Amino acid sequence: MNSFKFLFVILLSISITIALFPSLSSQELHLEGLDASYSRGKTSFLAPKQRYVATCDKYPRVCAAKGSRGPHCCKKQCVNVLNDRSNCGKCGNKCKYSEICCQGWCVNIYVNKKHCGKCNNVCKKGSSCSYGMCNYA
Image (cartoon, rainbow, N blue to C red; front, top):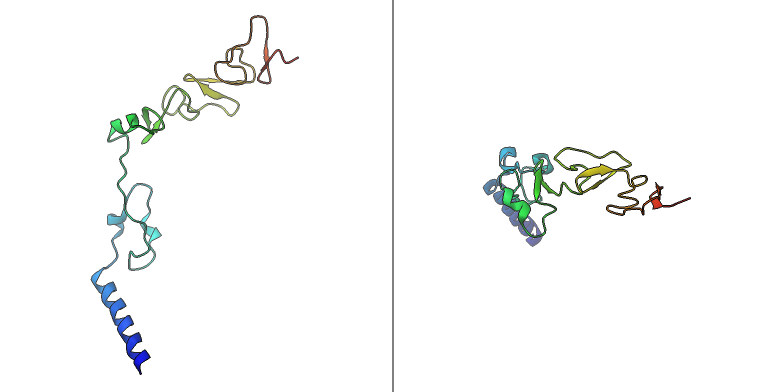
């Protein structure tokens, strides 16, 4: 009989908790990158915690902060347009598959004499760049 009373008290406390703390609506859960469908039940017990995200489109200074990926803002992300393949030289300028971004220019490091094998690796005068190496053959 004691175990029945104990079980009854536990179930009663759970139902009171559910009644007092209803789940948040999908409008309240809408954060950047967080979908309200993540929470599957009526409660938000297992839902991820809300966190504040300062994006660079609203707060441009966030890109100048220490630890930022770059000083420029492209599509709500801080990037460095001098070496980012997806935003080379300007936002949205993507380099081709065989190219990398060197100083804001898309270059093919396998044949470019000024960027042979890596950025700013200049081949000597009279030599060529093949397969990313100066004077390969």
